[in-house]
Image (tube, rainbow, N blue to C red; front, side):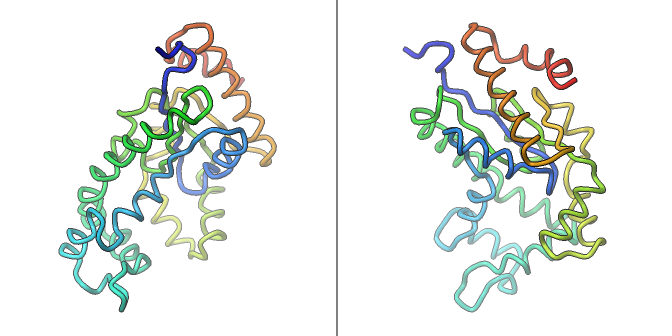
Length: 225
């Protein structure tokens, strides 16, 4: 039987576009933790022969396909990000399938990740209701204006396009209401690494003391002051 500090736990890691989630993931992987990438699972869902592919093509038409029948993601992206109703339709197809894949990945990775702790990186963790399968939620947050500028530079988008993509996601203040731990990305990469290290240390201490996971919520403010 697992001890309390090795009982499998799934931690949702989320944040807005360009908030710094990938930087946190980089640190977690280097530290030896397993990370489930919801975006990669979403890509698998929409590959030919995998769940969701036929439903998406049926819904959006052959115009979203490349000549080799693979999905033309930029075309699909322009369709759904320009129409909230179409984005909702895409999510209704893909999100339940991705959730099943998440739970299967968690069961597989919990036995090999440090202390049975597995992270789920998902920009849409809250919107897709995947937070309900997690025991803890970590949120990486950044000033919206800075995030939009980073998104423009990273993806070569206009300010209007970047703003539109940013606004399709949950408002930052609403996302924070779900947070057990907040990683405020206001400094350098090294600063964010340091905050992540502190959060891991506090998690380990909480589990080794046989505490429930939720006291992290109460201590979140003092932890980052």
